[in-house]
Amino acid sequence: MIRLITGTPVPASRRIARVWFGIMLLMTVTGMGQMPIFKRYYIADIPGLGWLADPYTVHWVHYAGAIALVGLGAWLAIMHLAGRFGYLPAQPMQMRQSGVSGQFGDVGHSGQASQTAGLTTSGKVRIALLVLIIITGYMRVAKNLPDFHWSAAMTVFIDWSHLGFAMLLGIVAVMARLRGNGAYVLRR
Image 1 (cartoon, helix red, strand yellow):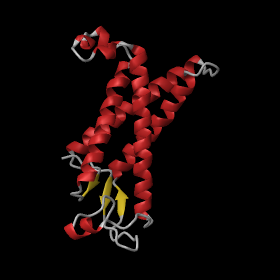
Image 2 (tube, rainbow, N blue to C red):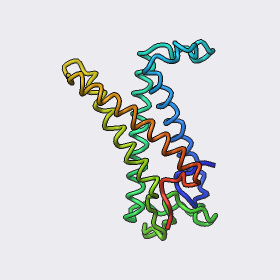
Image 3 (cartoon, helix red, strand yellow):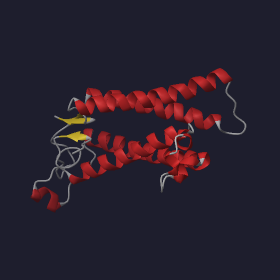
């Protein structure tokens, strides 16, 4: 079972984690597709994967995935901060009666969280890497604009940084999962 938050049996948390995993998988596949490896190694010949051979399609799907990633990340950050500062609305009555806790801690009628949630160390590292990936991704988008030019050395630096941070994020995420510390948030 994948969780973004430890200690929460809430199905919403599992759904968010699955969406997060799906977006990250899409970003990984389309990110690798920016290098023409799928056509070169005949992966695009597998039925249903022919779109991976078209660099423009892969490029735009990667952009769409980036929009989804930034949107979901922003929503999660806002919800996390709202939970920390007690701005989450009261839970519906059926959730309180069934004993299901909220995604970011139990929230009563006053809107005050009875439990606080803090970022785990691996969560902080992965969020920092995600921020670096987003920054270098925006720089790559700017590079593709018609009237915007980087020097050749800066372009290579941005490309390799983006790839390096993405690979490092994958390694850190796998290591965190293997160590049993896959959650971003720890409820206290």
